Structures are given as structure tokens and as C-alpha cells.
Length: 381
Length: 137
Image (spheres, rainbow over the protein chains, first blue to last red):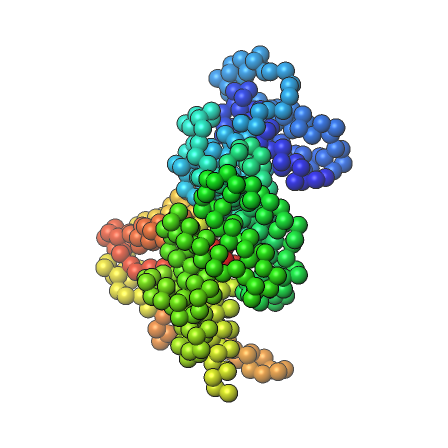
């Protein structure tokens, strides 16, 4: 059984139930129950019409769950109103689901969990494992999120930017547990791009594809981080790069630049370089200037300092860095790199060690510690 | 979304405001304290922020490798250990501010006289496993 196909049907099945009058929270529970049943039953007995099967089972689950008197009265009304099985629901419904699950009243972690379940069709257990929390905690997080959005009108247009932030968060989580969240984020963004014509949705999809293309080359067999300049570029996924570049070019041609398109443009320039030495750093600096104009993010200005260091030499990079607050995350790591390029190995080693101490994740800490050790060993020889 | 460890110390933390040893509380005060801790964990599970909570026995031993083919060396317990962990709670929250807020609430657990202990809890962020896009170009 193709689990991805099953999950791709989730949003349309859910919106059928909602259009029949089920409230979102109950409909979502019923769809989840139907998905679990499909996973159990389909391998031995696959249905001819997968979506029809899911709608029937989910609707029955919904009715079963509403057995109180009031619910029964309401259900009788609903059954009478039940529309004849018709064509697939309008694309708009799927879009509404994205808006609802990324509603601004939700915290980021709640929006992520709800999106993965209601739009992505993942089970609570899978989501819990992916985020390394107990299943009971994730179940509560999801039902709380559903309560939070219970008063939100389903037909109200939402903000694409909030949806993109949620998908970006999912993508950044990468791979843990038995779910590949990066691949799932790409699938959900692709589905969103099919539902709405928006250059930033395309920009985010392109960014994800371009970044994902480098995944195999990004870590060594022992799990350690391989910096971009040292990656084996023959291991980059050219198909994913080609698709990302094509989507990006179509988006940029519309002349409505946004931060995801600009980030994707930088990723595309890296992807285009056959070797690290051939990277077009001058253009990358220009894109960082655009990004800084769009986001005013300190992370962008730090990355820009690295790019300036490559384009105009380490002294220029250090000058760009000097304008930034030294307490910024990864400031020491960038300074260490630029000092090494400038030939000041003692300062670089000290800064790498300092950066390792402040690193927010294990892979970076180990990488920075190795950098410091490498320079110290060379200096002591 | 970030995980934090709330560490509760038997010893080694700065002195609490309401610093009376637990064996000098009334039994009701002890019950009230335990109830508070259980309620706190239950509430965090409801908000979808609870990951784990465990208590540790105060006495343990030091263990180290002692060379090929030899059993590990054990030593202790040392009554004079400066720092002693009593237990922990792991939470998964949206921000550092939220982690501080929850640690503050946990520190308000009632002690002697039914008044909050105001004990110092150590708050430590987890290192995550992998860097995201923004960090690696």
C-alpha cells in the first residue's frame, strides 16, 4: 500500500466532512480514525476507490462518535443534507485547511502538529516520535490546537505567510523518528503550490528542493557535518536541483520578490557552481543585500559577512562582521572562519572553541570543536 | 519548539527562600507539595508541553573503567558531594520565556507553612541534533 497516496487524500476527505456540516475538530478525529483503519485493512483488501472508501468510513466514524441525543438530532439533519458523491472538492478547500492549521492564534508548535495531522495525514504517534515527545503530550497538543481554532470560520481566507512559516519549521526539523519531516514538508508545500498561485509558495518549494538536493552530501558516514565548500558535489541530487531552479525562475519572472525566493536564489547559485571555487559570491552578496532589505534578520547579515569575505577577501568580511552585535548566535563561528582565512590561526582557534561552547546543536558543536582542534594541532607542530 | 531540562537539586543550588528541610514539615504539607508537583506535570501534559519527569534517589555511586579485563571500579557514596540532583522535568516549549515561566511556577511548590519554597531550579536547554537551513547557507 502506498502510504503517501493515502495521506495525500487526507485534506480532501476532511473537507468533504466539514462541508457536510461536521465541525472541524470532530471531522479531523474521524478522518484520523479512518486513516488508521485504512492502514490496517487496505494491505489485504485494497479498495477500488480509495477516496470514496475513506469518505464513507470517516463519515461513519463521525456519526458513531456523535451518539448523544442532540448529536443524533443533528445527525439526522446532516444525513438528509448529505450531498450525492460528486466530483473532487474544490482546491480552495485544501487551501482553507492550510490556513486553519497555521492560524495566527496557534503557537508555532501547535500549528506544526495540527498541520502534520490534519493536512499531512500523519498519525499522532508518528508526529510524537518525530518531535521526541510522549504520544499523550502530542495528542493533547493537537486537541488543544483544535479547540483554539474551533471558532475560526472555515471559509475565511488566511495569510499565506503564516502557512509558509509553519512549513519552513517542519522542513528545518529534518529527519528524526520514522518520519522524514523534510520530505513531508516538501510534499505539503508542493500540494500548497498546486492549490494557490503565489510566488513565495513557489520560492519556498524551490528553496526546499535546492536544499534537500544537498542532503546526502551534507553529512559524512560518521554523522559529522560537511561544510558546503567541502561537499562532494557529485552527490547532489541534480533532478531536485533542476526542478528547484525551474520553479524559482518562474517565480522570479513575476517580479514579486520575497524572502523565500531570495533564499532560494542563493541556494541556486551554490547549486550552479561546479566547484566551491567557482561560486559566484558577488551575486550571492547582492542577494543577501536583497534579503537584508526584506527581512532585516541578524542571521542574514551574519551570512552576508561570510559571503563578503568570499567575494572581497576575509578583511572585508571581518569589516562587515564588525558592524554586527557580537552576541548574535554564530557570530564567533563566522569570526573564526574569517580569521582563519586571513591567516590568523591563533585567533581563529580561540574563536572556534568559543563558538563550539555556544553552539545550539550537537552537529555544529562537534564540527566547531574539530575545527579548533585542527588549528591547534597545526600551530603546535 | 525547544526542549528544556528543569533540574531540582538536593544540594548545590543557592538557598531557597522558604528553606526548611522536608522532614520538618507537617505530613499535610508534604502531601500538598507532592500534589502540587503531580498537578503541575498533569497540567503540562494537557498543554502539550510535558516530556518527562523523574526523581532520583539521593545516594548513588561513582563508577569508572579500570582497564581491559577488569571490573569497573566503584566508589562512594560520598556524603560530602557538593552538588546533588534530586530529579528533573523535561519540557518542550515554544520559547525560552515560556520555559522560564514554567520553572517559576514549579519553584512555587508549597513547603513549610504551606508557603511557596521559592527554590532555585536549574534551567538547561537541550542541544538539538541538527542545524536548520538558515544556519548552513
